[in-house]
Image (cartoon, rainbow, N blue to C red; front, side, top):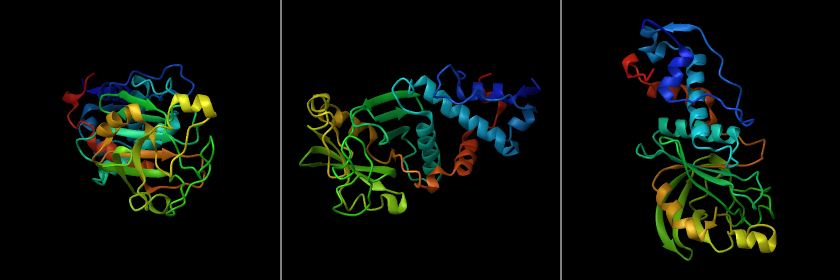
Length: 273
């Protein structure tokens, strides 16, 4: 086969099932110009638009196959987490053996499950859980954020999970904030993932919201060990908020797209089409 339609190439390469009827998904990808197989053998010859389409198809495929829309994770938030994941891989900040990302959406009520842990390689949702915010960040909704020690507020942005330890909450997971002034003090503030009895459906039923931490993303005790064991040792955690002023170098789309293009098979015979 000498010529291929690029969209067909992308669908085969990424095992993309195609956009469904979900309103959270972007419009179907447009068909682009036919390119030769020899062009596909050299990813550096692809235009940025073609690389961008491939990356978006990759994200859409994971989003659909993992059923993330049905579990309440917006496509926009997931896309930001995936851009961050790609940029972190490029910089060697996350483990090359880790394909798990954690996403917290603090724009949502504490009454709903707003933590998602996704295996992006397997395209599978591993956990969908309640998660608490800091007591000075808000009541039911998280509205105030800080990187300041003793603020008892949550911090937004990108983190890298670190090592585990046993503290007053049992097995806990240290976090390293890598998003400048947004969360750089996470380690010194002892912002960690840990289980807590105030993070439960029973607590929500009694008080109308979750309990709150001193700034840590606290999770239910019955799943804390399993979650921590899955995400420890240099995986990505992205805490999304409604703050429109938030900016991060890890959200650089151009960098993420170019990094992803380098991972695409260079031999047309590798493509499943």
